Length: 89
Image (cartoon, one colour):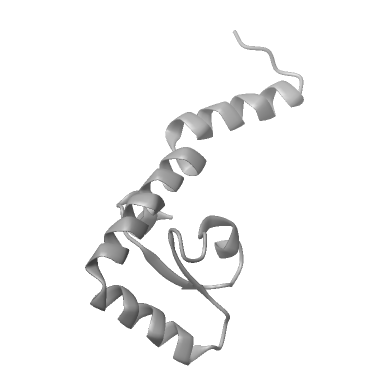
């Protein structure tokens, strides 16, 4: 998430919540755990295609801002408090 917020295309494995953060082929590459050859190919592809890397980085930044930014965090936090019965004061 931090790399995406910095405008970086991401190459990561499909562990934990990572598949919910990375849009494969849009914000980076999502690789099946244990698939070392695809992991290497994805890294090499980004290293050799600056335009693709920039496009994915821009998309990653936009997704990070939209899905994980402070505005979103604030909205989601307030919604959780409201569901718990707290009122804005």
